[in-house]
Length: 195
Image (cartoon, rainbow, N blue to C red; front, side, top):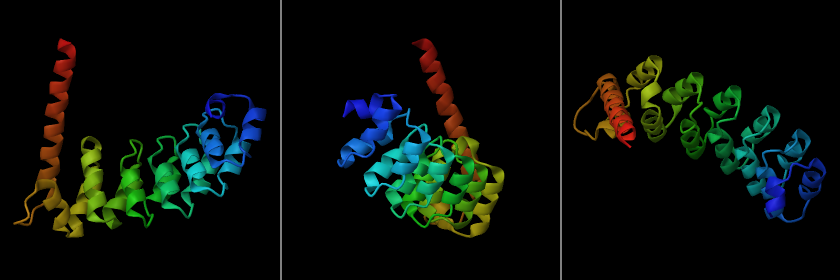
C-alpha cells in the first residue's frame, strides 16, 4: 500500500499501523516520516516482518533500535545491525550477538564502531572476521589487527590469502589488502575522470 509508505500524516500512519494485515503494517514501518510513538508500537508487533522493516527504517529512533536489538528473531536484529542510522552503543551491543548472521550484517555497516570491531575480532567466528576485514580493509584499526594476530587462528589468515599450507602473520596480509584496494580505487578514479 503506497499510502502507508509515503504519507506524512501522523493520523493516517496511526490508523494504518493497527491494520490487521501485516503487509500494511510493514509498509508503515518503512515510512521515513514515522513518529516515535508509532515506531514504539510497531517494535512490539507480533509479526517479525513488521519489526524487520522497522529496523531498516532510516528514521529509527535510538529507543526503538534498542528494543529491536534484543528481539528474539535474528532477522530483526540483523536488520538493526546493518542500519547505518543505528546508534553506536547499540552496534557495540550487537557485536556480542550469538548469531553469525547478525554479526555478518553488523560488519557490513559502514558506521561500525571500533569497539564493535574489537569485540568481533576477539570472539567472532573466523568467517565473520574475514568478512569484517574484507569490508573494512581501508579503515581497519591496528589494534584490531593485533588482536587477530594474537588469536592464534590461522584460519582467518589462510582464508584471506588462500594459503592453507603455512602459518602466517596477518600484518603483511592486511598491508597487501590495503595496497590492492588503494590501487584499485586510484584506477577507478582515473576511469571516472576520463568519462
